[in-house]
Picture 1 (cartoon, rainbow, N blue to C red):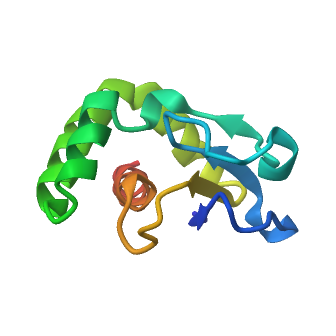
Picture 2 (cartoon, rainbow, N blue to C red):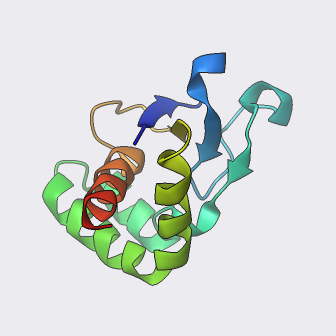
Amino acid sequence: MSIAVKRVYVAASAEDGYRVLVDRLWPRGMSKEEARLDEWLKDVAPSHELRRWFHQNPALQDEFRQRYLAELREHGEELGRLVRMAQTRKVTLLYSSKNEAFNNATVLKEELERLAAEM
């Protein structure tokens, strides 16, 4: 299985494979041509409420992870589809956060890998 995470503002490359934006809001200053998306999955992004909460509480990464994973439980079909896709081709989860070490895409990647191990 091949899943990567990448900041949407980094130039697209052929190695990205299937490019999926996993943010609820469109990246500021980014054109659709520059983004070179294959898909935009707003539904698997954190809710507006959770996104706002985390923006105000960036040190609470563990709590964000738990709240976000709880939201993701509502999107089993989309997650399953991403897992199945990643088993046959590379999938790159794109995010706009400035924090490259921890963001919703890194949490989503961990969850997809966990789900794949259960399949």
